[in-house]
Amino acid sequence: MMPAPLAGVRIVDLTELLPGPYATQLLVDLGAEVIKIERPGAGDNGRALSPGMFASVNRGKRSLCLDLKHDEGRAVLRRLATRADVLVEGYRPGVVKRLGIDYDKLRPLNPRLIYASLTGYGQTGPLAQRPGHDVNYLAAAGIVALSGAPDGPPVHQIGAPVGDLAGSMFAVVAVLGALFQRTQSGVGQYLDVSIADALVSWMSPRIGVHLKSGHGDAASTKREVLTRPAYGVFETADGKYLSLAAVETHFWRRLVQALQLTEFAGEEMEEYSVRIERTAVIAAALRTCFRSRPLAHWADLLAQHDVPFSTVPDISEVLTHPHFLARGLFAAGAGGPFVQFPVPMTGVAGTTRPAPNPGEHSDSILADIGFDASEIKRLREQGVV
Image 1 (cartoon, helix red, strand yellow):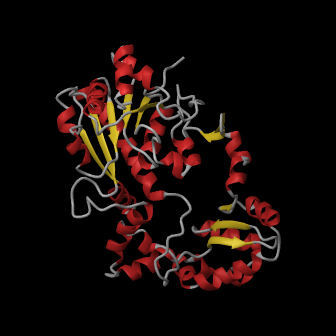
Image 2 (image 1 turned 90 degrees about the vertical axis):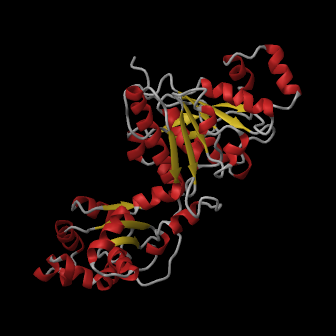
Image 3 (image 1 turned 30 degrees about the horizontal axis):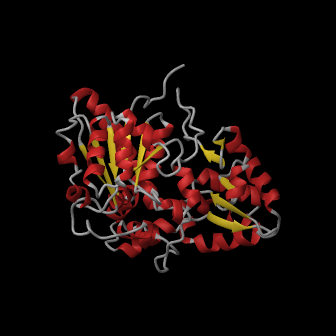
């Protein structure tokens, strides 16, 4: 059997809550061993703030409770770092340096170490020390300003933590790139991953529109990118919803034919620019049309005419959706189904091991790096682990 892509890679994870743990969860799914460092006692704050979220992004990890404010605790971490391929941390800039566990301190102990810092605004710049959460990073990157109605105020209505997850994805990409680069250079490197920077990168298509449009003002750019005819979410007669995206002209034709929207069947409506000018009129006609029949009717009809649409399932419905079940996206775990790595790959089977209890693997991890039973007992007596 082919081994997993990251089999044999050891990662020390000092992060908590969501961005770092989700990144290292993906690396676990790819076969890496992840040692999760938690504070003695309560452990990761995510355990108390959102137990379900914690369970979903910490599967298959090993937990070592370690007091990094204690000299002995930092000594244990340094020993771990000498045997690790990657270290990921998410403290506010400057914290790891004060603790003496920053990249400059660990690199001489292990020149092959890849050290990733995942923070809101990065290690440098005027905002580096500012605290934040998902909505703050989305706002800083300009995404919130581009949200809402074309001529309305900024809003934040995204149900998923897009900002945090953008940072997670770029952390994973950077770590994988650094691991590959290390096969050629033989040495590791430092990765300064900023969630806000990641989101600005995701804004590249919108920035392109702004620069090329000639508007010169952000309000006009917002109107341009948010004014999309035959695009949006519509209610049906039974109080359910569907999403529609008949953007290209050939899909527009099919929509007009399927719904028998004869008032929009003229040749002038073949031009996207004309449809943009009539966005509000088109939306009103679609709302009236879709409210006349139940969702099942429209789903069948739009599918028959090959029009881009989707129903709008809630989370419970997603978990039982025939499409995702057919693709094997979910696997059974101790706490219920979980989402597997979403790209089928050779050697990637996914881990069914649940998230660990705080310090569940402390003794075995310490033994792995050379501590004997008496030393482990002493560390426990000192409150280090």
